[in-house]
Every structure is written in C-alpha cells, then in structure tokens.
Length: 155
Ligand code: IDP
Ligand code: MG
Image (cartoon, rainbow, N blue to C red; front, top):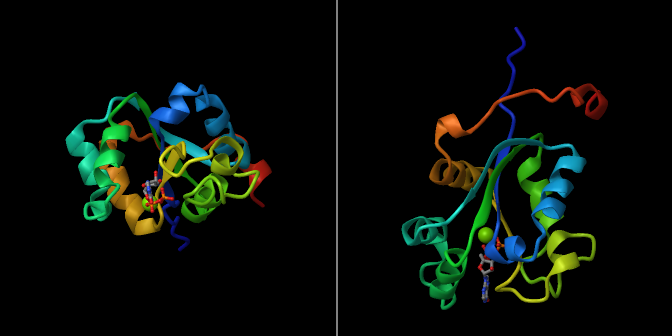
C-alpha cells in the first residue's frame, strides 16, 4: 500500500522592516511563484514572550535584546509554506544572514544592507520548523489543500 508522506513545512516571517518597506507582496510572490504552497498566514503584532521564545537559541548572544525589541516593534507577516524540500529551499531564496554578503537574487541580497534589518526569518532545519510552526500557529490556523497547478509542477 502506498502511504502518502506528509509534506515538509517551514515557518517564515516577514519582519517589521519588510512590512514597513512595502515588500510583503514581493516577498510572498517569490515563494508562490517558486511553486510552494501557502498553508498559514497571519498579520500580527509579536509579544515579547513570543519573541523571546522564538529567538531562544540566541538568548546568550549580545544582539538578543535588540533582536527581541526589533521583532516586537511593528507588525510582522507570519507564514507556513509547504512543499518537498521547502525548508532548505526557502533558506536559499532568503539568502545569507548578512544582506551585504547574500547573493543578488535572494531576498536579503536584493533588498538589504544590514544584518539587523534582513527582512525575513526562515526556519533553519526541519526540526526547527516544527518547533516554530507550533509556537506561532494553532493547528486550526493551518489549511491543508492541494493547489490545482500541482500536475504542472510535479511529474
Ligand atoms: P538567520 O536569520 O539567517 O537564521 P540567525 O543566526 O539565526 O540568522 O540570527 C537570527 C537573527 O539575528 C538574524 O536574522 C539577524 O537579524 C540577527 N543577527 C544575527 N547575527 C547578528 C549580529 O551579529 N548582529 C546583529 N544581529 C544579528
Ligand atoms: Mg536562524
């Protein structure tokens, strides 16, 4: 019997600089036209508690306080995207952490110049994605669906 394997999912968030600079549509477009599937989306303010939990691995880093202050400073667009290999592929589409060294063609490489204003967050591994999706979204906020264009994307 052929068991359908659960598709990989990642957590992405357009940070306050991406929202303030009017790049929400441009950023979403890149994942949409690539062929990944949007399964969760919300425009929201981030509480200090959520920010601290999200960036928990960086708690001891000198930039932690600034990071939490920034992500809570204005609205963000929280998203879950689905597709084969989406975690690693989204990281490539996003580009390296420091926009000055991110490749042109990536989101950070095309739109940023500063590591503290790098526009978007993306989960760095499948396990991290699972943790972050659970942290940011309730189960009933995620929508499982099959886009009609799937046969045109996969053989
Ligand atoms: P990532 O976003 O590419 O996964 P991480 O190393 O997980 O990068 O760092 C989380 C966020 O912290 C980065 O996106 C960036 O905004 C910020 N950050 C990382 N390193 C520095 C730094 O050296 N100075 C200031 N901010 C930093
Ligand atoms: Mg990271």
